[in-house]
Image 1 (cartoon, rainbow, N blue to C red):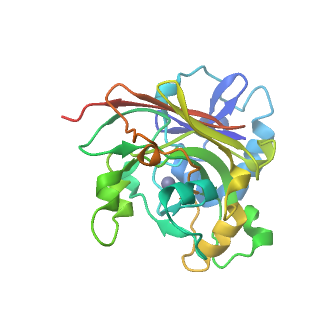
Image 2: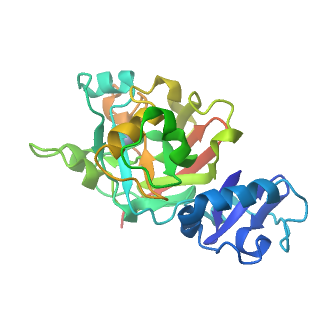
Length: 286
Ligand code: ZN
């Protein structure tokens, strides 16, 4: 199943177009994309039968354009983000291997959709393509074996980061430096793990204005998806509709020689195999 947010309404993405969830379910499920995570198991069961049909209940499949898509998880109660989760990136960033994943937040006001324009703040704005995990049911102190059972699906994220804010001071401001408006593009839709060729090993990449910047595989994570759920949920109960940015591979601008940062009119394209692509454009700050 592919679940998207089209003009603020939950839609299933089918070969024929977008199918409105509230209409197709005759109101059994609401139109708010965020509300579906509160009854994810029932929704996923309904969608598995409906999405494969041709009539979709009372709703027709309609064509849509990417710019009308919002964040598939528009109002997560908790946003977790993981730093230094790929060995080559940890090395380029100058950090030794750690025994606990570096965990911070992107404040939820930074979360936007898959085709957006971001106004550049002053500073050094950088890219980080990441696999984003979406929680489908309460997860507290989960073990590795059951971790995937708590996941609704996966999507793409960009952990856009302003490096001067992020790294200034004796205790770095990871969360603030990564939470300017528009710094959390996500989408284009949530994909359930059963639709992916291999949920543990997906090609992940991004390019800036046509030039390849990052290219890796999610199987290169130091803490894989189940392990991230184990480590985070050992402390924080994970709630339906929470999201986890799972870390970025090497190739960020801050560690290139010479350094490279995002400029006005740059276009950032972020891709993950089996999910799709995000397109993020940039303009000069006011
Ligand atoms: Zn990141």
